[in-house]
Image 1 (cartoon, one colour):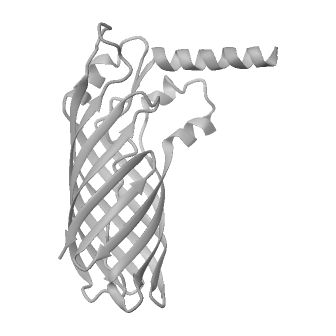
Image 2 (tube, one colour; image 1 turned 60 degrees about the vertical axis):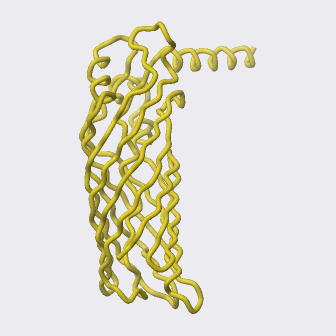
Image 3 (cartoon, helix red, strand yellow; image 1 turned 30 degrees about the horizontal axis):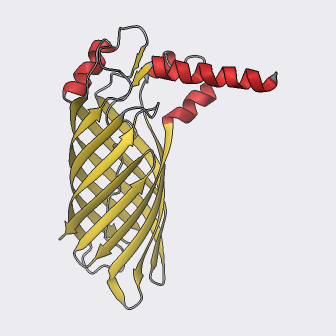
Length: 255
């Protein structure tokens, strides 16, 4: 009996997920990205970083795919026990439909999205040997989305069985911790591992629609997201790999 009840509940959950169409902003939980900064053992105490990368992720029901390219430029500084960085970015991508079948209302294969925005990052650190321990930091990002996917969300928001966060302006903030170190006898080869935990502030309409039957604490958890980043630099070149709700790979140049 308990097994049959469990199967029934699973069927209802799957059916609800397949019939309901959930759309969030293209950069929801995707606007934060690792911002490189000079380490205490770098000769240059201020550097400019230019990079390009590829980002892939899914929607909340794991049935649509978002693929985007991103260009970044930022400026980083190191002071005594303190780092600072700020920069701008642009994103161009495609939202590929996997939830709406051909012939159904509002069917589409893919829709374009773009975004522009800015980021800022700061942290305190201590140095131990060839390691900088950036024990606490704060990161934030603002982005503005445009394109046919943003227009689509506005159009379907009033329709039944559509659950939509139609925001096109996002502000995300969170805390970080990081360890960055250089190779033995070569401070031009560096590795960094960073953790991030943050949230996108402001009202999310899904809390009053798609998540309305959940408790406050459950809705709070939905709006918190983690990221883990690996950073490597070789002389004037650098790369990052980031994993959270997405996979983001980026390569660039510093000068």
